[in-house]
Image (cartoon, rainbow, N blue to C red; front, side, top):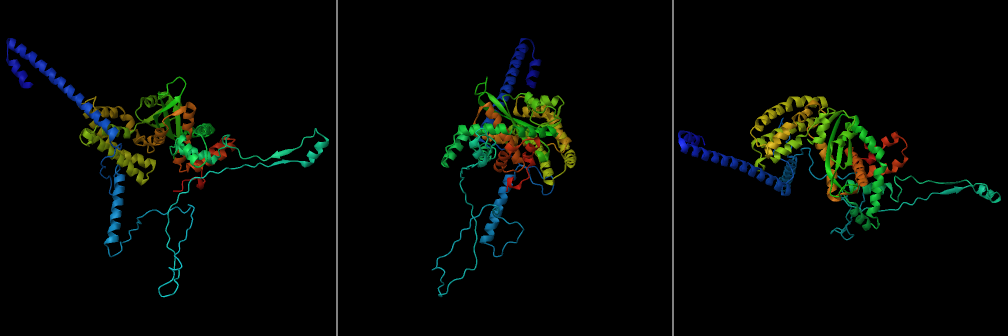
Length: 541
């Protein structure tokens, strides 16, 4: 174009005017071609993302960062390393068993399957040879010199049993005799009382606990449980179980309220939300999206997960939940959280996992190269620092010092790099959007440097919301608003119990047995998952 314009300027008269119009038209076509090329690249990239989402792996795994220190393991390839180690061990065992003439040197590691837990019930089955086989060819009888022992795991199917409560009744026979002469006389009588149930039904605490855990922990819809019970010889309809779940959800409200207070009393919290669907909600169509929110917090020894159903994703949900809260809030870049953060009530911490996901989507043809590849590599270094910190078991003050020394220079360099690339990246493209997303949230992405208790991402909340998402894939929807609220409360109790390594079935059975006896706040507090010390309620493995 430069030489063409120079040639046009050398002309004169009508020829020059005509050539200028021609050059202008040509320049417009070139500009339109560039715009169409950019749109085509964006469409092709979106098509690749869509195909990857539909048919590709969902993992964001990529090559590991260089070790920070000698012996440091990479962050994103633990599965591959584990598989390689297993293969290596298998090959070594095979080589020793088939070729070595000398036994291998004992390195202290004992490959092989783990021993079975000692507390599992055991049944001993003895095997003996026949009387004929006990006779030696020389005519003498063989002597037993020992036992070769092996173990196998058996599965005993679930069993149902009926508990009959026989409540004895007493009266005073002397007063009964006297009443014959004096009909106005009252005969004293007493009847033994059976233990109170958490809900008025024929279901024991054990049955309720199993149904709740099967649905909200193992993701078995009630109609599938109905089929399972039929195989066990019990006709228990899903409608009946649904009513039981609603009543259990109402019975644990005092516990949920106390757990929510723990989140507000500690100054580090996490939040996330996902979609759900409620069919029978007044004033709304069945297809309308609703939301299940997840809030996590509490001191480390009192960690709590609270789920709440809301028909909206509006910021008022977060404002209401965190009313009076002062501290750090880990969340994504959703504007509902940002309003709360910008109000100054909480310290915002945005998520580097979300940033990484944006740049992974911007990788050219999925290959880690170019601007997006460089940024992904830098983020990997930040995560490698976090992994190193966790393995060392650093204290909060030490974590802050390490981040300031190791992570802060990486972040400062990355910010300068993104500012430079923002000027040359197409705003509508995946890379331009990723850069804009990161730069727009930068103040909240570096907040984690300020406190060792803060985390680099919001993965804790995302992991907590995942059980609901997995259950949603099976349940599809809630029938009513009351059902959605009950589900949220039961999820809260189960996931909090899992955080404290409680066996959900054993814990809920204990809870449903003791809950009817609670009279004071102290009684309820004693039943909270983080206040349970009974080892029989803990997960044994």
